[in-house]
Length: 288
Image (cartoon, rainbow, N blue to C red):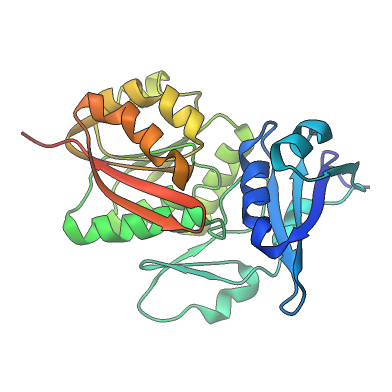
């Protein structure tokens, strides 16, 4: 037996062209999954979409949401999150190369390497939203340096680590999940930026550890559209004049909704980055 908490699996086999939509529904529907995977073979028309959960999801609700018959069943006592992510290929996103221990010998020259191991927190670089954010950070680095960065909803700490490596400045990484805070600290240590990355357990933007370091000239929030809209006023208050904001964890059809919550606070949409159904937004608060 292991010491890992029991997991549940929701899964369905659908036509390949529907797999991304089902995956997105699993990502967005409560309870939040620990991992979402798409299994497909090159010459077969179908794909299997699986989501792993620390608690049983509602099969009826997921079936209604996706229009498919979703099967929910318990899994044996194994570290399925780690097993699901072992062997994933490295990811190249902007200037970054994200890899696991099994790919340590494959790091090319001229990249910013980030080693992230599979674990309990979200963010190995393989999800489209994480890669979109890494690309956005790479683009921003060409424009200017950032000296005070907040990664809101840090997961594994991947984006905070990327920002620390780009600008060699202090980055505050926060999450509501204590596992994410622990994993972020471990990954910052493994990537040689532990002195620069401060991980903090915090819900939203009201924690004193967040407010005392505001305003931030860069805020990254790779969470979901719902929290992005709810947190808009407090996020905008924490953004400095001339500051940049990277928002992701949203689908392309949610872009205008999310933007509508930020533009009343004097922010301007500068860039939309897309990959399949997923999107990342880059907004700016003008200095003048």
